[in-house]
Image (tube, rainbow, N blue to C red; front, side):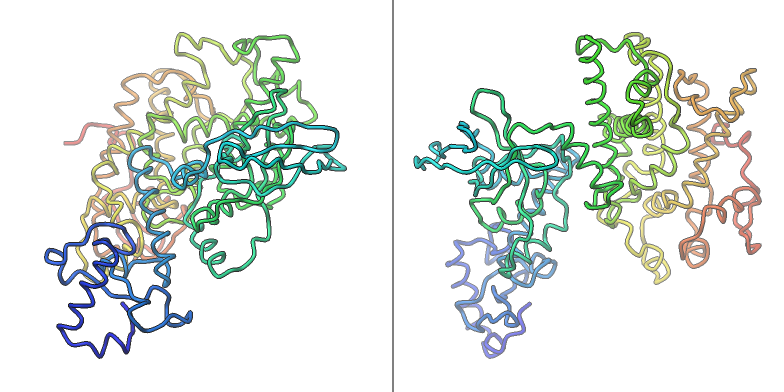
Length: 541
């Protein structure tokens, strides 16, 4: 809401007249959201605010006022209403993609929303010169630019200002989505501060002289400029580069070199991509067709013996990526891939420390990659599908139709301590998914599995490959019963424990003590009795 001397001097009728005047200027739309305003139906729900804040030199008069919905104005991420409008538009795009496709927008989505990603670039090379034009957008002048060669990589490239209609995104080399931090770039560029790093892209050197220009670095900066109305993006364009090398460089920039702030989920996705590339290179080297997978993970590691450690990581990254983005994975909706949001109960880092650490077999397999694939008994496929099944059971029992994203995770215990009534189903989901807690109780799933096989004469203690064999139906029943019984323990719905057990971040050993003894390390009674796996795998009641 504006802190305005001008508005403070208006009487009721004058203010009402100003509201109608602004409404007419804005064609009956909210300045921020673009939604229709009905002056009768929305009376009392509207704000008048400065478009450019007074602190930024904006005037305190009618020329600098806009009419907005109060909820949009008071929740805006930027004081400047022009920026607030852009942020709102992006927020709506995020919510739509999350709702319909369970993902965040990438550069392609932003480009398409603003009229980009339409045309391939027609070009030809003559010696050290590249020539092209933008005739598809009626710019028929011929552009001739020098081609440079990188001294170390030997890659060829040129620089240009590229109209957004010719800009595309490579989501294989760089699968990063456009995150909420784009708002900081929007504010930076809006203030007129310079862009310090240009985007990187490439064209295929396919002999056809026609290729999409695909950006693989700098997409956040490109997106911010596009959202601010920029129609041309400065780009360093590689000509027919070694994409495997670029992918590897991008992966290393986000991992070992720490040059890029990649989320772990993105690192795993890149690792999976590098694994697929290594498989394809091995197939070509050995004269195999693209659908011939009659070789093992160990064979691949031996073939790439100069990078065996990396190959092992790529293999496991591929498994993790297949689980994380499996179409049937219900838990994925509740995982924040960046680990910084306040709406979701799990971070990707927590998933790695628990599900992936406990249940993925880290050893390279000696069986062929396509072993018993058509029968549905391929070890890696079983591993992925059965870990997803476990995740789905946990999601169904603890989170689905129970955890409320609108409430989220921010200061839940503080709200409970202040007397606020939050639905207990939501609180249970929040508490059980805290990293130190799920780390402690998820290990009991290993006990459930071990006990079942021991009772049936199979010793699997210490093994890591049990998810690579089909888990019997009764064992799945035992696992689900355990999770149901665990969720129904009274401690999760205790208001009293809000300021003790759940009031601060504990370590997993704290919860291990509780589950093993029924008491906290300080001797506080928490459970009626220690967790007994044998009884908790029985049906409730």
